[in-house]
Every structure is written in C-alpha cells, then in structure tokens.
Amino acid sequence: MSRTIRDALLVLADGTIFEGEAFGAEAPAGVATGEVVFNTALTGYQEIITDPSYAGQMITFTYPHIGNYGVTRLDDEAPRPHARGVIVRELARRHSNWRSETDLDAYLRSMGVPGIGGVDTRRLTRHIRDAGSLPGAFGTASESELLAAAQAEPGTSGLDLARMVSCESAYEVAYTGPAGRTPRRVVAYDFGIKATILRHLSGIATVEVVPAGTPAADVIARAPDGVFLSNGPGDPAAVTGVPAAIDALLGEVPIFGICLGHQLLATALGAETYKLPFGHHGGNHPVRRLDTGTVEITSQNHNYAVDDGSLGAAVEVTHRNLNDGVVEGLRSLDLPAFSVQYHPEAGPGPHDAAYLFTMFDELMTDFTKGRR
Image (cartoon, helix red, strand yellow):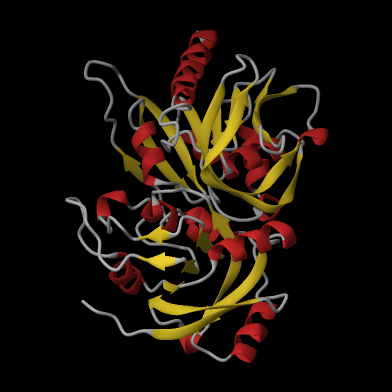
C-alpha cells in the first residue's frame, strides 16, 4: 500500500533542526516528544522498538535502511512499544522475508507510534555524541511549535518509568527446559522485562513475573530458588522502594540482575549511579570479562551506569566496557548476588554472554546445597 508523503521536522531542545517525512502513526496535534537517543545495531529494529527500556525516548537508528525484512509478532519483546517515536534515514519501500506479516510503517500505525524518515541520521548522531542525549520533538506541526514542545519535554531523569511499563499483576511462565529435571522456581521482578529474557529463564525454571512494586516479603512467601531483576527504562535513582526490597532479599535467595536490575542491585549494595552523556544503545559493545580476559560482543540499551568509585570493598567489578571503561558487571563477595549491565539474552556475538544464565542456575544449586 502506498503512503502519503507528509513533510515533517525534527527539532531538538537546543534549536537544531532536521528535515524529514512523517510515517507511522499520526502524532497528536502533529507533535511527538521524547528524549532522543541513537542505536547502532544493524538488525533487530523490531526488538529494539518493542523493548520497554525505551520508554520516554525516541530511537534514532544509525543503520541507514530500516524495515527491509518487515515485522512479525514473534519478534516482539513486549505486547506493545513504549518508545515515543522512531527516527530513520530511509524507510524501506518494500519488505521481503518469509516470516514477515506486515511492513514497519503499518505496524507503527497500528501501535500508535509516530516516525520520521529522510533524516540525516549521521549528522543527528554526531550531534548527540557532542551534546549528549537531548529532548526533541518531531512531526508535521510548525517549527516554533516543535521547538516549544522539545524545550518543554522533561526527558527521563528523575522519572520512575519502570512502574509505568511493569505488569499490573503477577503471571507465570512455564518451564521449557530439559525433560526429567525438576524445574526451579524463579521470581522475576518486571521493570520492563523482555520476552527473550523470559525464554532464557524458562529454560532453567518456572518463572513467576511480579510487578515492580512487589514487597520482599511477598517474594519470599512464594518460596523461590532465585530472584531475577529485569531490564527496564529510565533513572534507577527514581525507582523508589525497590532497592530496599532487594536489600531485604540479599542473603535470603540468590539474585541475578540485568541492565536496570544491575543498577538497582548496585544501589541496594550501597553504590551510586549516574547518567551517561548519550548512553549505550547497540549490538556491538565490546566488554571484557575480567576473570578470564575474554571479550564479549554485547547488546546494550541504557542511559545510566554504576559509579565504580562508590562500590564498597565487598563488591567486585566483573566486567568492563572496552569503549569507555564503564562498569558492565559486578558481584557481591559475601552474598549470592551478581549482575551485568548488558543483555546476555540478545545474540550479537551471537551467544557470547549466554553463560550468565547457567551461572545463575549454578548459583541457585550451590545456595540450596549450602542450606542443607
């Protein structure tokens, strides 16, 4: 189906302007706003768009052609996208893949997500690298309206976005691992959990997913073998109450965290977090595993990081980003808890970091044996 070409503008809060063409859903009053970030992945645009960690943000894809292989509901990481908008250089005119069910433009329209194409994404990415992530607005409204909207956009700092994307009630994901093994029980905190993470966890356990605000006592009452802290959007310092719940769980049950879960575990262990200039978003971040020296190619999506200078003596850094030295993993030296900043469920390496789920399984085994 042909689409009507609608001229559009992207305006950043600092007044920088980019010309383009609107696609996807029509933004309310011709204005979509959010914090503008860029992602360097070459493929996986659907998984990126449906990752709840992008709540409050507009995604700039640095790869120039987006939409080539269409969209299939099997690749959704969440029931709906939480991103505010999509920014691309060129939207594919036609899609081609045997798994495809529809094209990206139609998918975004059905999900109410606006997009802008024809943007000089190379210039935009360079600007974000120099200026940092910025609030922005795009759409068919006037330049002055878009600038005012961009400057009024609060961004993601200080917002508890995790509770906005979390499930409203608990639900269970069935065990899918090897037959003949008694599955463990894992309680997974949903701060914006991805479907692929649940597929990995269900390979070792029956998973009970609980809302972000679930008290520690309620988790313990479910008698889990382990607790998982999921990925999620926004500022970890704004996720109130959760570090205290994690603190109450430490020592009571093994804990494994990813992305926001990593930051919240670090907070519970006494560390502080800070906002990166333009975050880590992409599928090509090299991370060194410090105990072996192995370099993993990782998928990442976060704007905040753990301040390693605030880590206590009982916490060990296990992984570091080779681009900028940021802490990518940690573990407690006296409690059964560890975490990583990146996404081991994703496959950019393609499976460099899948061992972390095995480590969680082994940690639960060791903890159970230690209690006998």
